[in-house]
Length: 280
Length: 280
Image (tube, rainbow over all chains, first blue to last red; front, side, top):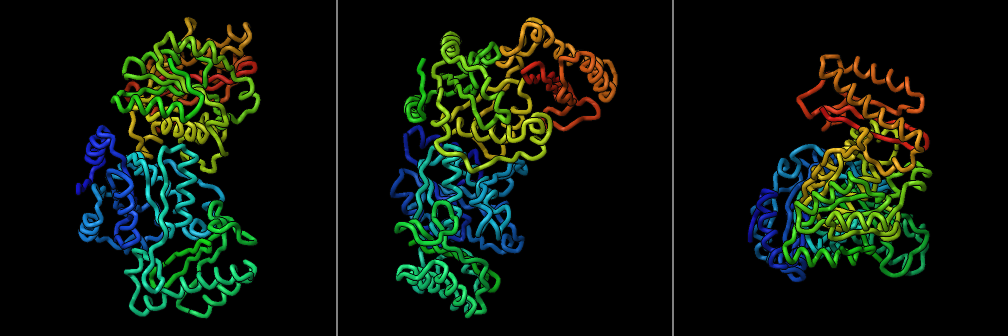
């Protein structure tokens, strides 16, 4: 497995692969890898000749200084996990390598970014759009892999790929969960043991809400019951719960065809902000 | 010379070129070609294995409906000129082919786009940024060619290439002028014979302004003299004249090193808005 910290080194390696007509799969990550990431890397290695994983804690997508400072950084462990998962090349640049100068260009995704994560984290999706564009131009992948846990990020990146005519395929994989249902997240490491025991309630409320809707309750009533359920667990400070169309992310009055609706949630639990969603 | 109207046809042709390790030069145009364009095409053909010219009157960069409607469209004549200039492939898509859906994403270039053309044509550089990004992703050129006449466009595109880490080189060629100094422009065709006789005054005022500064007059005084000169020709309705740094496009109190300052001007002449600039 090759490890690159410079864009020029990465591009030199990749140009050799292009000459040999190798297909490239990219998994963009911020490191602190868990099974959710590794499932993406394994898929990238299975579906392409070369799997590239980027590890870069992108400062421009953080609106919270403490969240950025405390985001877990575990490069040596990450590299070992990537080796085992069959990754061929890792790109782990410094902030200076990614941003030799402060970008002047800003992305505005319109309505899709003024809700949920966009509303709670101003500038977040601009940061995501810029860094993902840069990584796409550095790696030139045939396929790029994202986790469904970041549902709104997936919608924003798909929008960007369509609007700018990027020549690549976005592949989305289901959220990987702990045995008790908690969605895997690098931020879970920052939960105390007591908080870790409370965290699975998020998934329980998501599934209960989905079940209510599938049993015929209105979206409005199911959402109200979910709000009640969150308020019964004082440690879970709800940021939002929204029941939306998976493509437009706009609120829906009733569920659409199977697989086109999602319940999306964000909560603060102790020092950590967690998000999760369930598609139905 | 190959002519493509579909993205898929273009990509199929280009992927064969990439397999043969051919270098690609792209000249993005809106058609109605003149010697300024053809100098870019000739350079693209000389410096690359394959020269691609795009012809697309991009509606999203027009803020004036009449300007868009009356923009000259001369495809057959353009194709003949391109054949003679040594162009290998032309991409002339319909609006529907370029924009299967209305883009949601908007580009904001910050201070560089709120002045001069950006101030006079709101949304213009967003339209330019989106369409140039799309063309870059469709053609994947090694080099892309632009004319210095669109000085602010060059600055915006260079900014975008740096901010998004596009893997290509921007090549800029000097403005090509008629014998009487008028900068070549597709819009010149819309001037009446009387207006065409007045138009060269723009270049005369630009050169007189540059000469004043190079002879020691202050930038402020030279600009004042230029304003006077324009007001003496009532047919030339001045939009702006700015003396700026070529990289930042911000006003300068005094000229910098040779080649880093520019006098930029936009005027309305009859039905047509003309721009020009002089670097010194």
